[in-house]
Length: 263
Image (cartoon, rainbow, N blue to C red; front, side):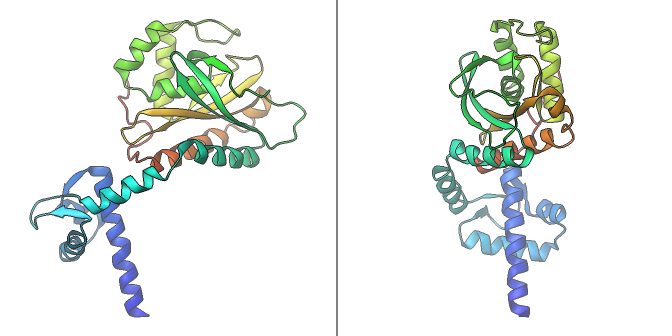
């Protein structure tokens, strides 16, 4: 039993080192020991084993990086992972957990197209089915989540091209105000549709990112304004957590708001 406990502890520390390397790309053995609270002798011993197995590149002195075996495993995991199928399963769980509609949309030019709509609730008042429907980016939580995840120079150029049509009294139609809204979205990690696309419909959204941190789609939870405001302590947190979990499976390792914060 003691030997099994020792092996489990070594394995856990090995995984911790690999996860740190995935986040840092390249780091010294001394930095690994300091960051993980390991002794240098234990760090060198585990690194030696990982190097023998091809999971790290390390010459025994300074820089350590992921090795070819780790890269092969990562590519195999990505090739077997469909973010859209995974997202749909998560959306059903979100809808069941939060008792509201959960949606996913992808970007097509300057619009967002709804590609999933899960609603397992029995509310008499609910969000209408939106599969295949197109919406403008500036007036939806899905669009704003996607915009906020883009690099600043790219989103600035895109905002200059958007047609900021007003759909409700709360729709953002000023480009400076939209940029400020996206700054807030980056800082808090989720977007808001404050009844900007349809009257009395309120949404929280978050982007799903690839390994570079670039958005590939966005998810949201939507419902009647009064009901959603009563859940604002949990809905945005859960939407952000689910989006981040899917992004992690795609190789994203940065924090949610890591792309060009502020102006």
